[in-house]
Amino acid sequence: MFQPEAMLLLVILAVLGTPAFSANDYHGTTTGTPFCTSIPEGKNLTAVRMYVRNNVIMGVQVQHEDSWGDVSGYAEGTPVVLTLSDDEHVLWVFGTYRFFIQQIVLYTSRPRDQYFGSLKGPNEFSDYPQSSDHVLKGFCGFYVRGGLRAIKFVWGSLSGTCTD
Ligand SMILES: *[C@@H]1O[C@H](CO)[C@@H](O)[C@H](O)[C@H]1NC(C)=O
Image (cartoon, rainbow, N blue to C red):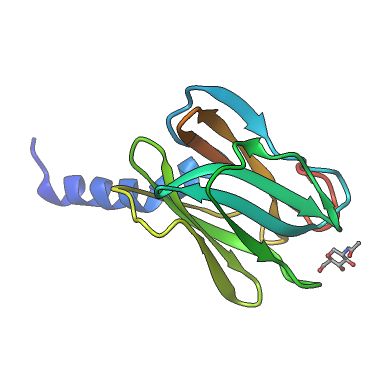
């Protein structure tokens, strides 16, 4: 028997449930070269640099306590940097993609936000830690010559491991 109320409830639950299911997953298309930025244990993320060219995220690099890791992807285009102050952490992210990852927005505990890429793509995603005392530690993803195709956010406890 067709039950419109039940269908509507399922649709609402599906929409509400999407972020929970997508947390810790890749956003975009997982083809190309896989990468993870440096994610050292016991060190806070202190800065994020992304290279943006023609509204595409080309590369990403992270700093943990004054030590920059390698660039994942390509250091091509305009570098955009978010420098976190002491006791400031990234707690939520938003992003968009079409063929490539086009835009990432990092929201910090201060609170404030930093945009990487200005063009909003048609596919939106957001991500946040599963545990309330977890913060952004780094990124994983996939890139091809034209830019990042997928990104995943690695969350972990303050000054701890990624899985605590
Ligand atoms: C890392 O961040 C936490 C929470 O803000 C802070 O208590 C700790 O001192 C930081 N670690 C270092 C090495 O700065």
